[in-house]
Image (cartoon, rainbow, N blue to C red):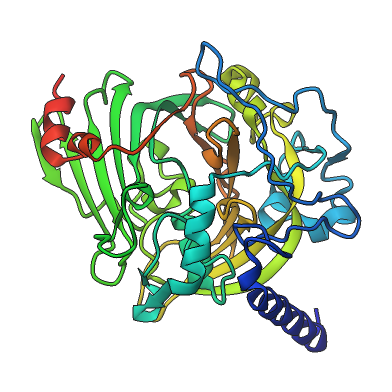
Length: 446
């Protein structure tokens, strides 16, 4: 791409963002959805208009939600042989996977704008649009509560905070597996854990005034394999990364005590991922933003994993293939995404020298991510898979993968294929007693 074309693209992106910002007052009725996405279909009609209607996904006796689109067939298949025809709608990481593994294929299905949320969240987003602001160089969010803070983002940090503070329930629980696959095709279950997620930021009894800044608590209790059973982790995330990036505690059965653990952040390797993913790779990115300068590149249409209730219902033997997930198990759709690039800030360190995140416009959650190493090589690519829970209503990423493009190893994390479904409960402040260091000690003893 020559300099003139690059300049034209930059001007076009800036005009798009400016145009969207001018429409901010129209979140409730106008060209934008209540979450700030474009309400209209694309000009080709391959991305439909958003109609705001929730899809019925009432869970069955197994607590798993049905696939409302199970009868649909792919409208397009992309392989390495024909990927150049669709290069403008593929991420760099997706193109690299297609080139690396002969069995990799993208089955593209009809697109559905299925992400719908409650009116309370829409009202909070509308209020945030006029009151939320960044401080401390983008590391602190002020004045936001109960919804994504910046429905029409003006910069990269605002968009990344939207991802971080996107709706994943109020109290969410599930049991999930983590699998590590070697380049030779071996599969190892490295972790099964009960996961509890509490989101004080979405407490319907709370409000922006008086919010203490603690937006999420997570507790993970390991039950398998036997060698790791009894281990437990707990973390607290804050909307102020400037003074308090993250708190973490760890219970180790052999020591029978809880330790404050500052290592559960940034690029510390996740031991259960065999070095293929770090603690800041959860949900494709989580944690403090203070090590990166984040740039909002703009919006584009690309193929992303989406509406993957069918993936979660399949046994793991039908999901994990050689080199990638089984293409038959994964649903891809064409959607509009916000593209962010995070580059290491001056005098900061992280093994991921550059990250590119693709945020679905309807949920604000990262659905694809690419990572470059310090030598400028495309190193890893991640995919996150959206669980549609129209009965809540919500739509959020759950399971995710990270592929090491250099070694060929990969990890499939937060997999519920063999462990049941996801339980969503109304927020109850009393439940926070389960998310404390003392509770971690009593629950971790085996």
